[in-house]
Image (tube, rainbow, N blue to C red):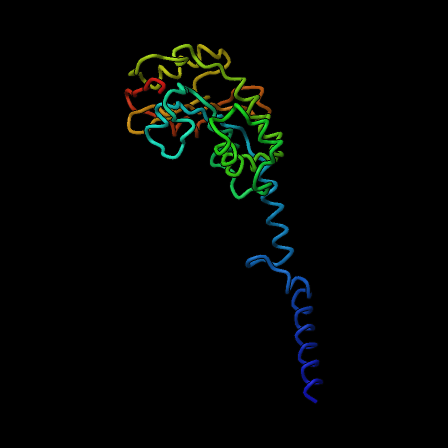
Length: 235
């Protein structure tokens, strides 16, 4: 009699689950979403990874970056003499950035070989893939190939190639130096980054196909707007 009661109770629960949206929808959950909802959310995140508007190439000015950031041992090692280096290639919306994008959590060794020589160290390459690369909608190998293309598209001004002394300069003069070195780069397409009056990098905006520089008002608005900044010489 007890077995019959248990079977009947289980059958009643199953019928109730089906009536309220299906057996598999009732039991297949990820966090607080049904299987169907989770699939829709995943598709939405995948769409976000493809549907961004442009890229920002972030170049760090190593001497200034190393004054304000801890943990970048390879980039900040004395004697390396690093100036502008690739920090990352960031997918962007016109306002805001994609986030929580699906993708491989860690690039393969083959993919990392494409990043060799682009970033100051492999640890940064891995981090940038996890934080930004997954939102490109591309594989790690293709993303690092795009980083290389973006880096090759930007000429570093002579003013910042192996300077031997610290400089005091205005943000607009930094921008002008980049405009002169890159004739297709114009005002409104880049921003200088600084912390506590020290230049730590520049942000340059590129089209999704990396063929053109492009305007990016939201990026330029977040740039450095102080009167003068220090540009320390490479270590």
